[in-house]
Length: 66
Length: 375
Image (cartoon, rainbow over all chains, first blue to last red):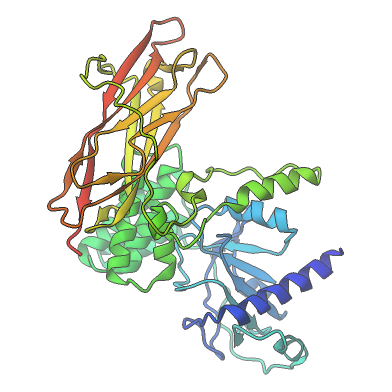
């Protein structure tokens, strides 16, 4: 399967998972600017932030492997 | 697509992503600085950093991608904190300055600076003791130090104590609760946290790839499945050194660390006890694997239960070795536990002095301090 297909399939799974899990997030609100937080990247530990992606639309998934 | 992970051990995320073929950027938030109270959370964020949907339905995706959003005023791009400036600012001796330096040192400092981060969090807590997030962050820092070369023997227990304190302050913080449950007893587990690791490694290898290495291997508690009842071993062996006749390890060949998770048990509640046995490298002590396995025995007090008071750690195939050995067991307090209790326990092992030294059979008494909470 192509990588792009994996991406969209995983995205759909994430969104479907959200719909069936009925978890409501109270921390974020539509219209709010996402917090300007610098965090280490998994790839190499260098600083990263959501602000790096300005200029493109973003699907952000906050999750855990457990 | 971007992910943010609030896990204590982010290297496991790397393995998970390799397993599932996920390759988008991930940011690590072990301390849960975002202060999310649950996962998973999905957000649509527009080109200007504005959240356009929270927990969106699949059907919203096309609209989001096709929508033209109005440009909004954007805050400046975040930069890396200046550790030196933040450290100097702690001279103001305010809770904010201590927290700022602690967070920056914990996240961006060299591994040797984790102790400074811990001390700074502790300074902040002296000024505001009932601040849940600071307790949680301090716990994360203690556990980070425990997993580093700067480890101190009680770091894991202090991590658990601070996570517990954070949860006492805000019992609805699901991320904080999960951090304790990850290492805790089966009666308090929602699911197995890391049972997927075995499958992941097997399937990655079957593809001809090398699984991403983990910095910290999951322990028994992290693999364990939840249980609805407290289970004890069906056949329990006899106490191995009933008369206490085996010579004690007075030279401290083996150093033992104990951690109880959670750090206090209420009436009828369970805890998972973690024991770590480390050969004393300063005196070049090492395990002798030619004879019996390491044996651990718990002398269960009246009214208390232990899932198995007789545990062993199998010797590796090498004749001698210096690896760290771990044992975990679970205990349950009685319905009226009374005050905190000291549970007698001990370990028996074969250990050698130095490479050409004598190999000895020794016992180490390990009194287990179990705090009892009043809840």
